[in-house]
Length: 558
Image (tube, rainbow, N blue to C red; front, side):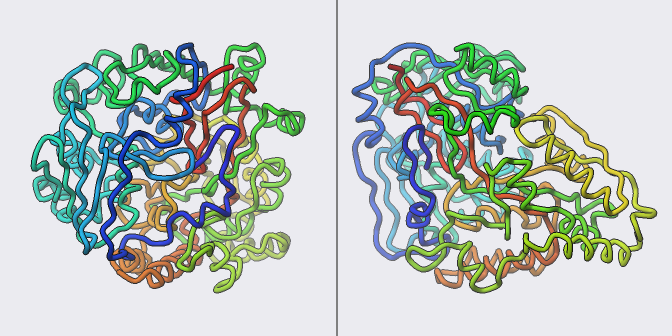
């Protein structure tokens, strides 16, 4: 994953995981024992104490690990919650609340051995039964967790659990320190799922006694990680202080982290320049040219794609010709290199750089180009625009006549508003009238998920290095399928990719699925992500991951 001063080259990321759900190796895997790897060793040399002030996002939609689907929300949550396993700064899976783990020879049974005498942040015992409760809660259709299907569909009994029979989910606690998961098919990156924030445990008592409000009040935000919440002021700040009951508390450095929930980029930039922030993510786009070359300015590659969601359940966006016309009218090269000032790169397909394929050292993106070519030819914008006009006429809207006025949902941060203004103009060339609907980030994510929009800015940063993590977003019923796209051929290919035990077949099915989605214009890829932010030079041993998280728990300030 990512860093602060250190970062794995994106090419190296494709080496990390070359097998997928279905592509199981047959050997027994047992984890390394011991503490948190190199990050804790480095932290032991740090001077403890002090306060860190950072801005990585605005007010989150949720602070519930099971309900969050945003990278800024995950950053907040990862400092309060630790799951079975963790990911270190080198993108390696390391022990978390489980000190060791192994899977059976057939890859179907995973056993996690918890550290002895674990505690919640309120000092009460944390046991394997807490994981049983939390994983069943993640599968519960009443909760409607965005990641429930993505993460748990490989667990035996998930289908029954997702229909309300939670006890069918094959997770168990033979004793207080052992958590066992049985899979329906082998998944050799299941350790990454066990390290993902949504699978972290939540305390049954506080959740059931306080309902949704448990995750917004310090007195009920009982957590399992290095910090505990001591203040929550929506729209202003979230304050964390060290958790005295955390198993690795001696290596956690900062006494306090203050998360500044500022949405306006100019306000963030001012606060950083006035010394009020040690790190700032939301920067005004007009400042980027002057910041390039500044040692405090960081531009990190990410495994993700910035795209546009069409609400495919609403006319006229349920018409593939309309979606194709809108997609072809977007000049990706202009968006990435002019509006985004070269901080992003133009998208040619859905899945971008840094994602593995079947062969060793191979790239899913490169294999896509070899097999199918680039879906979007960004050098032929004028031809694409002419074709877009033809398609719109074929769909019954010559020169945009009869096409209803529609809205584009976005938040006002980074390049989102300038991109929206560009789209307003680009689609105006088709004779269409688009209004820009700017909302708070937490409202954008809620409305997108509920389908309360026409067209919306969207994006996905990978949670783990397998192309299924992005392609599966568009599967019917996926909790993160904001466009409500549904195609039986696509779903069948994704299902085959999930279930096959053959690594080559797994990736080939995903390539085929990506082509179905692209040809149906189920979404409109625009650019491949990078992350830019400002970080004070006296800050060290913090890192930013290619999956979009900032991690500060082992950092220090000189």
